[in-house]
Length: 425
Ligand SMILES: *Cc1c(COP(=O)(O)O)cnc(C)c1O
Image (cartoon, rainbow, N blue to C red; front, side, top):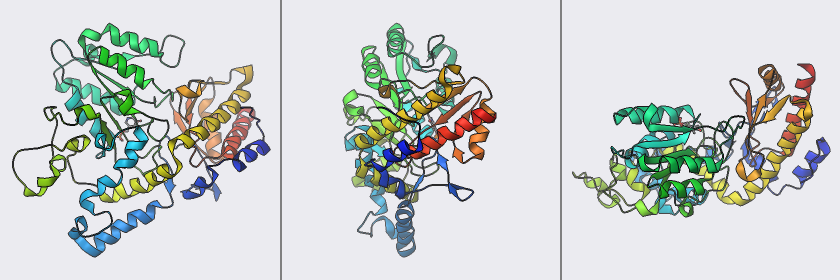
C-alpha cells in the first residue's frame, strides 16, 4: 500500500473504510473537551456504548427477581449466563464450543491450567517460555516451580532473541524445544508478546512441543481480539486470556480458557475443582464426589460473575458483527500506516526504531517504538497534547491503533505530534 503522511490522505482512508461506523459504538475519552488520540487498547480497550444497557438488564433482573434471577428470566437466566459468551469466544480463538469457557481472571487461570498440564516428573520437569514474559506470568512460573519443590533456575528455560535482535526466531524456539526434549514437560508462551508485539508461530511451536513429548499452552492476553487464532486446528493443549485489552470488556473483567477437545473427556487429568465445574445435571443435589463436566466447563470453580459477564457479552456481540477477518484487514493497514509515519519521522537519523516485527504476519496492531534518546520527555509531550499511549521503562512507547475504534486520522495526528515533539525537545 502507498501511504502518505497528510491529513487529506488519512481522511480519505477513513472515508473509504468499511468499518468506520464502529468508532461511533464506543465512548472515546476526552482530554480538555477534545477526543483523545487513544492508543492503549492493548492495555484497556474502550467502552462500547451498548455495555451499560446489558449490565443494566442484569441490575434490573436482580431488582425484580432477587435470587430467582438464576432461573426465572426467560432471557439469559444467571444459572447459565456463562453460556451466552461461549460461542463468540470459540469463534475468536478458533475453537469448538466445548473447548472454551469464560471464568476467573487470567493469572488465576494460568495457575489452574498449570495444575492440570504441568505435571513434572524426575525425568520431565522443564518449562520453555519467552524471556521477559509479562511479570504476572513470570511470578506464576516461579511460584509453580517452587510449589513443586523445583528450582526456577534449573527448570525454567527462558528464550531470548539473538544478540542485536529484538524478537525471537521461530527456528531458534524450535531448536531449544528439541535440545531439551528429553526433560521437557511444558512449553508455555505468549501468543503475542506484550512488550514487542511479536506474534509467535503458535502452530510451529505446538507441533515441536508435541514432538518433544510436552504439553503446549499459550497466554493470549495480547492475542485474542487482535489476531486470527486457530487453537483447535493448531492442536494447542490449552490457552487462557483476559477480556479487558483488545476485547473491550472493562477493567479487570473476566478471563477465559481453552482446553483442546482431545482432553474433553479425560476426567483423569488432575484439576482443582469447584461446584460450577461439576456435572450440571446434578450440580444442585449438593452431593459428595466431584464429577467434572466434559470440556473446558469442567475447569470452572465458581458461579458466574454475571454483572461482569454482561459487559463481556456486549463487547463480544460487536466482534461477532464485525468478524475477525474484516478487523484484521483494517488492522494491517492501520498499523502499516503508523509504521510508515514513524519510519518517515526517524528517517536515517536513527532517532528511534520500531522493535516490533516488520512483517504484518508477525505482528498484531501494536508498535513498540524504542527511543535512542529523550524518550520520556517526548512521550510526555505527546501526553500533554492529547495522546494516550503507554510508556515502558527504560525507553519504549507502545502504541496500538485498534481497528475497531481508531481512525487513520488518529494515526496522522499521532505522527504530527511526534514531529512537534522531535522539533521542540
Ligand atoms: C495483561 C496481562 C496479564 C494480566 O493478568 P491479570 O491476571 O489479568 O491481572 C497477564 N499476562 C499477560 C501476558 C498480560 O498481557
